[in-house]
Amino acid sequence: MPVRGIGIDVVKVERLVEALERFGERFEKRIFTDAELAYCRRHKDPLPHLAARFAAKEAAFKAIGTGLSNGIGWKMAEVIQPGGHAPRLAYHGLALERFEALGATGSHVSLTHDGGLAIACVVIEG
Image (tube, rainbow, N blue to C red):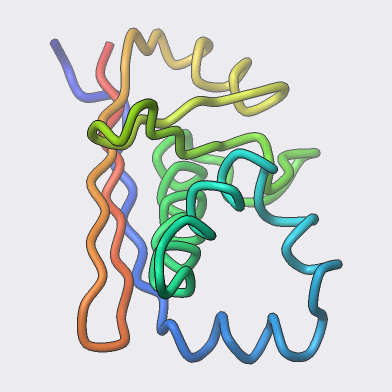
């Protein structure tokens, strides 16, 4: 399958902590879906997991070539992890329309967090 898009992003966990301290629940609700928040809160330290999902959203929007523009919003890319298996990426709304317009048939997401950094890589194939 040909590659239709690639995106990568790095987030300092401390930067996410600062945003949460400054904007609190309003920030969480604007960026993350309820399912993403629930998954992260099951961990002893949810912050690295939230940062990884933030990075995944940024990488996802880079991979479809839009960034956060033209009506694309944070919740239009969602990291889902059913049953604790490997994470998957789901596009919604205008982001899904763009994904489909690329001729995409699937995507892959890889997440990691260590040493105060969270990194995500997204590859779209079609």
